[in-house]
Image (cartoon, rainbow, N blue to C red; front, side, top):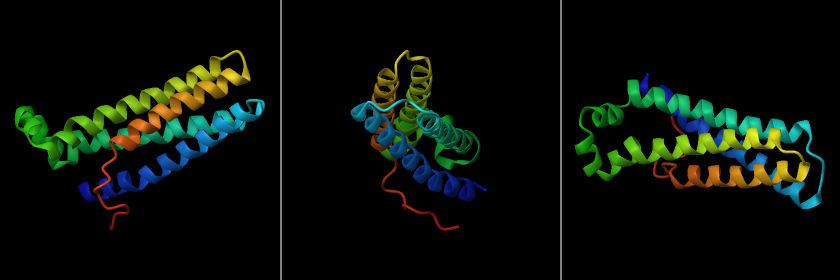
Amino acid sequence: MHAFVLAVHNILRWVVLLTAVVALIRSFRGLATGAPWTRREALSLSAYAGMLSLQMLLGLFLYFFLSPVGMRALRDMGAAMSDPNVRFFAIEHPIAMMLAVGLAHVAVQRSRKASTDASRFRNAAILVSLSLLLVLARLPWARPMFPSF
């Protein structure tokens, strides 16, 4: 089951990245052109936050219940911190991704509550950019790009 959930988690990263790119393009285009904020912009932003949240739930399920790396870290955090590979998956990756999820949800809320379309686009562009930077910085690029089942 670990291999299957890890493969789904691996595939879903591409969906997360795609939804981030769509949300960013729509945000920056709207900011540059002065276009009105529409339901499509709100949906693209919500899709990014939703896919990122789903990805986080899968990751937490892996971490606490299926992953040998997560189990090892939970047993002895001191030893996990001394091994760079284990530390990456036990601490760095999950914390960065949780922060990225938080930023994505703040983007949705701030864009929803903003009083002007320009501020909606600006909030979305800035917060999704920061969220995506965290994701890109702590994505395990050394893992296979596409899993084999």
